Length: 148
Ligand SMILES: [Cu+2]
Image (cartoon, rainbow, N blue to C red; front, top):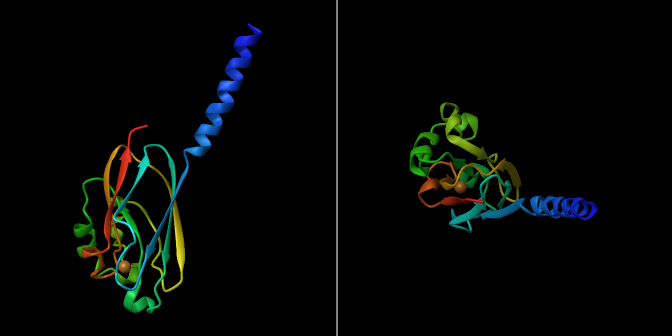
């Protein structure tokens, strides 16, 4: 009896450590060539995900600002990017599309960075983009969420 209790305690401790390790941090760079340095990344459903976006360019924000917008499943970067072009007042995040967003950074000027934290949604593929006007044709990618 004592042994099995100890075993459960040890198992609980190991599981606790494993849960902490399930957090993941993704770093993505955006540059003056209108590119992210990755075409996508993979996370596990239910995981706490931190995405850090760094604008490593030097061009002014009004000419080459970048953000990162992760969309709900089934809504495409092209759909969002097209509508976002006219949403300058809200940092190219259209208010009417808030329900299509899982998470987004703010719009970054040169040398700036921002991070977003969210829980990885259900397994599937989720498009992300930079919604600065005209950037989505090159600045887009896919977040793949796998099962546990
Ligand atoms: Cu951009």
